[in-house]
Length: 377
Ligand code: FAD
Image 1: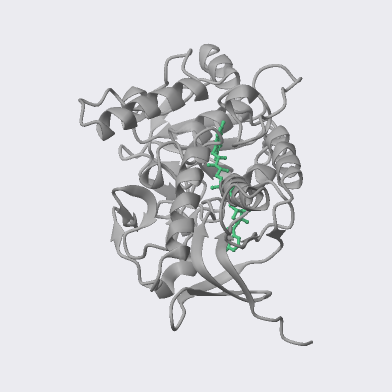
Image 2: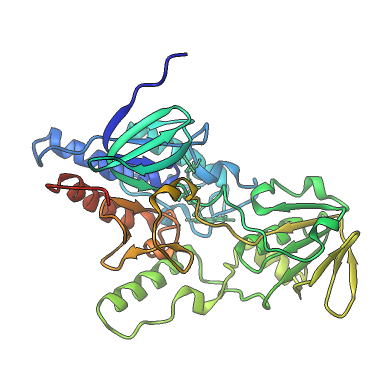
């Protein structure tokens, strides 16, 4: 088979989930502005995505998952999410369908499935990106690879002696396979609470959390969280005393399914166990519980292994970013991180929040690729 040709663009976006598509929207807008004579030359760009289908992480979530917010508060820039007729907040499938429509509506140049293996600084400036379908060069790289493919599981003694099944949020598809079984759900965040609630009718669920669960007030949903995060960022930027942030208020959004299970007394959390035994788990006081299945709802880490060759500086376990523009790498003016969480833009891991981070990133990316004497590092 002939080798795939080297392809060149000004801006290469890695990842075609909600964050990559939001970056695509703003890059596309520069193209439209150029075509209408409103601005000068727009950068060329491409989006590479490892998934075979549109939808990023949303295509992998369990079917009963519902959003924290109504459709009207879950939109990417430019095109509002259509209303959800199922009642309550939209489902994960509704979001995946919305992202499919979004990508098609703006004719975004997404190449999939293409997995990026590594990004290196190219001789003479810019980046050289190796994929399973050939190489790309670009002056700018915007990373929007999310965290779904890097589930985190803490080390617990005896884990390899446990004869039951262990899985992670990322493997959970619904309660059916666990009917009538003893299931331990680990984790005091949203996925832990939602999966424990989802399983509560079907299985014998024991929910364990490191700290007692902290529910946000019942009237706080995704739109209120976004307002809280925005107010806090604005106050900090203006040098004013910062109001309480989301983390100060709680960890768990009381979506209707969680509220229902909680109010029915089905979500009583126990402290974290201290070790596995062959048939289950054991607490410090030697109390033991038989378990067939342990589901780790213990979060994810940013999927950034493909950047190893760039030898980036890290801060608190994530790449260091520029205080003046939190999506920009502190090591390179032409390398950006979009959508991973507050460290690279307030609320940037949400549908409603990623638009502002994408707009600022694309504007900085355009400046970076036009800068005379530009070098990647
Ligand atoms: P992803 O959606 O993960 O997309 C990243 C894309 O990059 C993927 O398609 C992947 O294939 C691709 N990729 C990864 N590595 C490579 C590589 N090396 N090469 C090429 N491509 C690559 N958010 C909300 O706004 N509202 C909610 O109600 C909400 N509820 C949630 C509930 C749960 C249980 C969870 C886990 C998350 C929830 N979120 C919610 C958060 C939201 O789903 C994620 O933050 C969001 O999907 C992240 O989008 P992303 O585009 O950054 O990453």
